[in-house]
Image 1 (tube, helix red, strand yellow):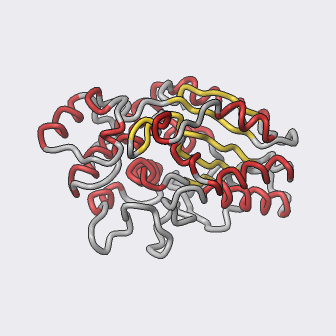
Image 2 (spheres, helix red, strand yellow):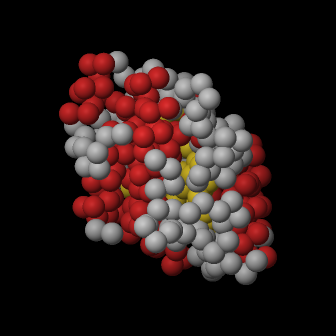
Length: 285
C-alpha cells in the first residue's frame, strides 16, 4: 500500500481513538496515538493475514499460516480496536461501545468476549513477550514460516518477566520473533528516566543476544521500511528488537510529549480541537 494511503488510515484511526476515549470519559489516548502508525502499517501492509473474498479479515485463533500480533501494553486498546475494526475484523460501529457495560471492547483486551483479532487478555504488564515467544516456538514446531510480532511499552521494561523472556528468546534462537518497544519516554507516573531509568535499552538487548534496530514510529515511511528490514533479518538465529521512538499523543498537538495524557480523556472542547487536526478519511463510526 502507498505510504499516503497508510497515512490516511492512520488519521482515521487517531480520530477513532480520541472519540472512543471521550465518549466514555475513560481510557488511554496518549500511547494509543503514538503507536497508531505501527499498527496501521502492520495490519494494512506488512503482516500476512487471512481474508475473505471481500477483503474482510478472517480470525483463526490458531493463526497457522499467518503472521501474529500480540499487544502486551494492553491499556492502549483504543488503537488496537480501531485498527482491527478498520481492517475488517468487526464493524467499526462497535467502537461506540468502548468501555461500556457488556461491551466486547473493554478497557483492556480480553478473550472471553470472543472479539475477533484478540488472542490474549493483556494489560497486566510484562507478559506479552513471553506469550509471543511461545507462539513463535509453536510456529517453528509446525514448520510455519510466518512471523510473530509483539508490542511493549518502555515503562513496561520495569517488569522482571520481560527480562526473563529477553534471556530465553536468544538462547533458544527464536528468530521468527519481532518485538517492538514504544520508546516514548513516558509512563503513567511521569518520565521513564525519573520513574525507573531504562538507560540504554538497545545495549541491554544486544548484550542479551538480540538483533536491535531503530525506528521513528511516527514516520510512516520509516515504519514500513524498518518492518521490512526486520522481516529480512529474521531467520538468522536471533530474535529482532525494534526500538521505536514515538511521541505520546502524536497527531494531537496539545497531547504530545507529556505523561499527563497517558490515561486522561479529553473534554468536549479538547475533543473538537483534536478532531480539527485529524482529517476524516474513512468515515466516522
